[in-house]
Length: 68
Image 1 (spheres, rainbow, N blue to C red):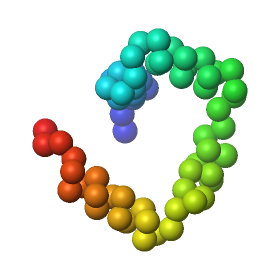
Image 2 (tube, rainbow, N blue to C red):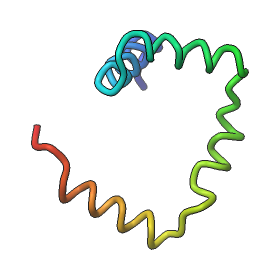
Image 3 (cartoon, rainbow, N blue to C red):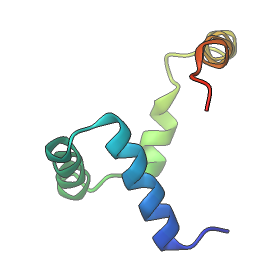
């Protein structure tokens, strides 16, 4: 299992790949201010999706992902 420090570093790197520093700060403030409930978020995350639609999206992502 990864340490907390590694998880935080990887999360910040992931955020940094998609957001600028101001947006990252805003995201952190939103999480803290709204009392982010991971369990509630998780139950609502895929509500509008079917297994087939998720499978299609995963396949599309796999076919179009940038090579590393």
